[in-house]
Length: 327
Image 1 (tube, rainbow, N blue to C red):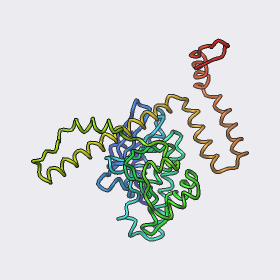
Image 2 (cartoon, rainbow, N blue to C red):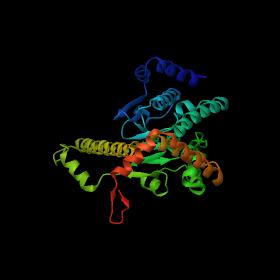
Image 3 (tube, rainbow, N blue to C red):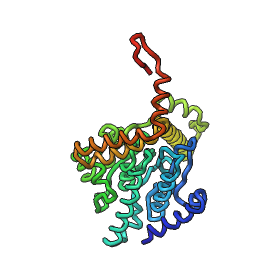
Image 4 (cartoon, one colour):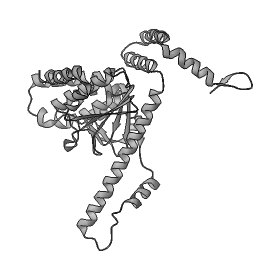
């Protein structure tokens, strides 16, 4: 199967040399912040970062590499450019496949998104523009979703004759509830980042304050004058819009990095266990979930960082007048 063959090529390189495996990738860019935060970018802006077989295989391998790297404690997934996080599956490929190939394609995409969802490390989706169809489903597989205020999000598959096929019917209902999931899937409509935040689809929306926009525009040396032609004015307006979009994207990434740092300063074993318990708890009854929580909680007492962090917390505490610890 072509997906597994593609993954095998990168995995073979990984066993030889990690950096070589990353260099082999044409459509995925990986960088690190402070060694413990990995940023993985889908680098196909000419088609709004849509996923075809090769891009999906590269993303699978990049996630696998991030999971194997013990230094990495959190992962951020985003798209290159300011227009799109991910526009989903590449319709030029999907349009011509038969049911057998469609089943194989969907099965592979499930394995990719399951890998993201079940990665031991927290995964943040930095949604910078369109997250449509499979792009929305990619974001749903992440633990946290942070969007720029120009983002457009939607399960748009029914508008091209198919239902969501990468886990959208299951993950969306668990995040926003069945009624809202049915509304979004049945209509195929796109919603704004602010609406997505309101219904709990994204955790936070990043925007630029009006004063911030005004200050930035004043710094852009493309002032329109009465003597400029219509074409020049349109070009200058486009330059301003691009500059604002770039700065908004920078602000989005900075917010995601700050969020990741808030996570990585905590116990990795505790965060990892919490993720497992939450994911498993969604698919079980409350009594089983509570029993799993007890086991997970108790197992964390075997990790050396637990006693170290507890001691540090107590040592930093200050006593109030009643002799209680305050922090």
